[in-house]
Length: 64
Image (cartoon, rainbow, N blue to C red; front, side, top):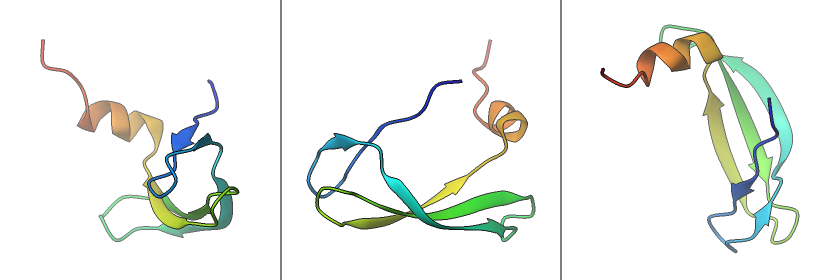
């Protein structure tokens, strides 16, 4: 597994956004992880919701 580097939507910098707050989230009917992230360059804050890898593979599977 590799570390993901996201592009900040505000400053467009390719940096590793820092997770400032993490909590479990079940609003979609399955367990997810909700994280508040901050860009170390411009202090822009975003929220990400992360899916378990097995669930993500089922949801985003390519049709063959």
